[in-house]
Length: 570
Ligand code: PPS
Image (cartoon, rainbow, N blue to C red; front, side, top):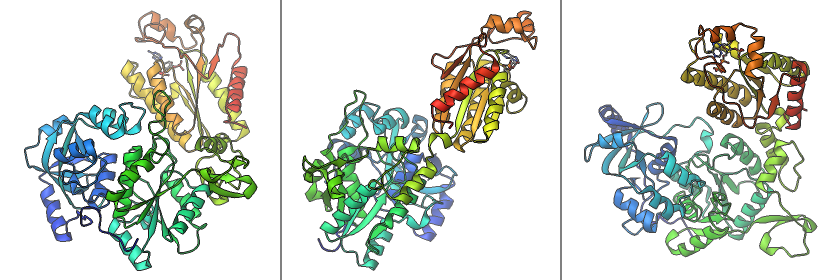
């Protein structure tokens, strides 16, 4: 393989206007209708404008979309496997005249590009899901996006780039295809093997990529995706710090790192072709395709969406049209007897083969367990441990729910004091009564206001949780769906422990410490929980407390024990 070929179908695109023209377009853009780009669309437009998606010169038209969806080629016969579409609301699409130019803006209102709308149509999304992703199961992240998140109408047309989407992080590691090609030229890198990843890289990846480059006498470009990856993946800030440490493991001057702001679809075989074409546009000559490339995991029946080597098969099928050479790889495993990594198909039955799956690796991180030296590098593990500390260093929200006067506040206070005594982590108590005087002082007790109140408490707790603290919340929180939403909000950052203080309404009324039940019975207080307003008891709380047989001290102790058994306290 010699010098770089032109991208399939001709020139590398650069859809940006020159400086003066961009300025004029910006002025004109003030009169255009504006569409605020979604996160996915911002990723797509960046790679359309900078030529990473060459030969596309805009969001697909209807004819292009049909051709790409049906047989992975543009109407002019050029291979393009992934529909890059601009989805908008019916309302917005309906407001457009034929041939109208619109302004595409980022979240801050910055004009990124203008689009001359040539097409406006309502796609058959189920058909798109089946043909492009081979499934209509919403467990596939791209199918879910298509059917549940993407807007109903597509508009297509040519783009004029005004300003590249801004990135404040890792600026020095972001390149356009033209910049990358220029860098390769300057360095004299005539053959470059590209490696795509959305995960942290460990020793197996280092060995695999190094071997691939060595076999092809090429340089190596590690080009991780930092746009949108699979939900639940390790955040890109942490990953990039890991990649930077990993670079130290390659011989000097052989390997480069560049970040790709791609919104992945997890589309398996079709996605592999797409990734390869993008790398070709970046000037790479070879592309590594391993096991289960861009795999979305299992479907609703727990069956994999794609076979482990489907992507490699499809790459072989289209080898002539791709113009970039696939470097296929089997799973790399560690062979204990040889103290080295090998592709699994080269190992023999009598060898001890070691591997740690992604799930097992996350379990070890979460529990602060040992990660062996054969698996990763100390600095990579250290960077991961810092961002993903073990449970006893993560934030946690203890969320009490129960009737007024059930004893929530008393137990919550006892728990607060016990946690402060250990001095382990910062603790904040968000008591129902107190929140009502501060954060939610303007709210009443309608369902809408109660939901708003609980959502606010949940949000504050999730921020505390995100930063490693312990949030204790003690509102009534009478509605199951709102409590579930708060749980989800918090579990994204740490632990969530629901405590149902299940004192019956009869006991609460008998105690009536604040005299509120009497007032509620007399109709002086309206919408009073348990009397004239509903309380939906939790079905599966982490802790169930009946204050009839447990003192506040013992109740708080039981919660501490629960936190310990879940790994949140040591
Ligand atoms: S909610 O439903 O979660 O938003 O309620 P919360 O914010 O916890 O507020 C409950 C406290 O407000 C007092 N109070 C009432 N409670 C229930 N229903 C009505 N109508 C009502 N009006 C005032 C009551 O003192 C609650 O405090 P606690 O600490 O729960 O007894």
